[in-house]
Image (cartoon, rainbow, N blue to C red; front, top):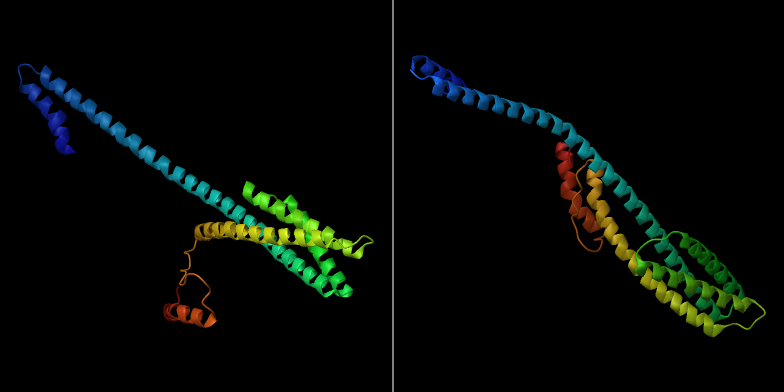
Length: 243
C-alpha cells in the first residue's frame, strides 16, 4: 500500500518540485489520488454489502425452512387421508365379498349381519366424498367405486324387503364396485409411494438430523435378516456412543 502511495501520489509530487513543468506530474498524482479514493469507496461499499447479505441469507434460509415445514405438514396430511381411504376400500370390498358368500349360503341370520356391516362401511365410504383429492383420474375412480358400492348395497337390501331379491343387479353392481375398488386402491398406492418419497427427502432437514441409511431394498427381509443387517451398526454405536 505504501509502495502504491509513493509511486502514484508522493513520487509524482516530489518529481514535480524538481521539474520545470510540474503540471503533468501533479495531474498524474491527482488522477492516482482520485482512483485510490474510488477504490476505497468501492471497498467500503463491498464490505457494507457483505454485512447486509449475511442477515439476508439467514432470513432466506429461515423462509426456506418454514416453506419446507409447511409442505411437509401438507404431505403428511395428504398421506393420512389417502391411508384412511385405502382402509375404507379394503373394508368395503371385504364386506362385499362376505355379503356375496352369505347370500350364496342362504342363512338369513348371517346375511343380516353381513348386510349390516356392508351398509355401515358403505355409509362411512359415502361420507368420505367430502374429502376431494387427486387429479381427474383419481376423482373419477373414487366416484365410480362409491356409486357402485351404494348401488350394490341397495340391491342387497331388496333381499330383506317385500320386493323380490334383485340378484342380477346385485351381481352386476358388486362386480363393478369390486373392480373399482381394486383400481382406486392401486391409484392410492401410487400416490402414497410418491408422497412417502417426498416426506423421506424433507424430514432430515425439518428435524435437523441426518437420515438413517436404508440398508435393504424391496420387500421386508424379516426380523432375523433385519437383525443381521443392523447388528454391525449396533455394535459400532456401543463402542463410541454415537451413531
